[in-house]
Image 1 (cartoon, rainbow, N blue to C red):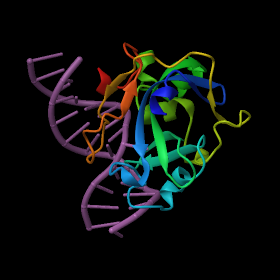
Image 2 (image 1 turned 90 degrees about the horizontal axis):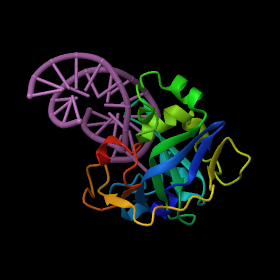
Image 3 (image 1 turned 120 degrees about the vertical axis):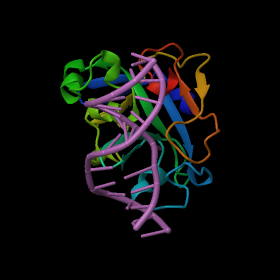
Image 4 (image 1 turned 90 degrees about the vertical axis):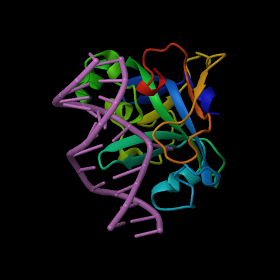
Length: 178
DNA sequence: CTTTGGATCGTCT
DNA sequence: GACGATCCAAAGG
């Protein structure tokens, strides 16, 4: 599912970005997944239905956003790692005063949450409801025919699995792709 | 542009 | 009590 999310739109209020980089996490059988080791308070949303938003808090200061992709009970999810800003650019600049270039706005999993205003309060929302605060949208742009592939970033276990995909030659991918 | 180390706190052991 | 699906400033090339 992960590479098929590429080029879809993620929106929060008026702020919209095109998904250009993702990572897959495969439930309890993936040592790098938050669900490795079974259900807990934090990962509860991962065990819920597909199409919902899993937001977690990490490093004492950052939020990251995932799309739950497996059937209920499987705890499979895809981390959204980078967006190309599409709309609401003014709000994004306001939310990320340290950004110097447009590509600094959403080129990382915590950066994009900051830019869009996504936080733990949004954990568990249905991304496909259409009327919600956070939405996953399809504007007809197909995923890349041949996405770039690489290892996942920032993890210490299952480091060699090639479960990160991004849009080739896109300016807005995270630093690890360049 | 690359490398390095600090920040900071919720979660699970 | 240890560590994390990260970011940023500072320093050097």
